[in-house]
Length: 124
Image (cartoon, rainbow, N blue to C red; front, side, top):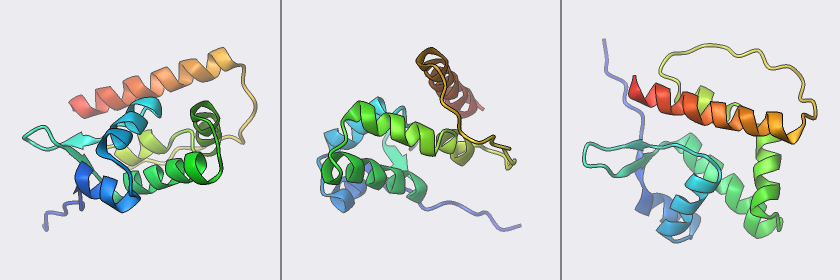
């Protein structure tokens, strides 16, 4: 059986591709609750879908003039489970009901739970 490894990029490559500084990538990672894998040496490693997510964030902030809060809200509404499904170790299908407007406290709790789930999966 062939070992399939996904192409991963370091933060310098991502920053250069997006034409931003490395600290901006790290800031977006924190602000948008994104999680990346790390190399054995502890360096951040990003896959193509993560780079695409950063491109979308840059577009919203720089081109469309969104605030951080506005961009977060829009991304959560459009792609609420992207981080979890993309980083999952096993394949599964998530049935997603049509998006409805939720009170802020519930939405915040969901984001917190998603982050915890990502951290748990990283431990596996």
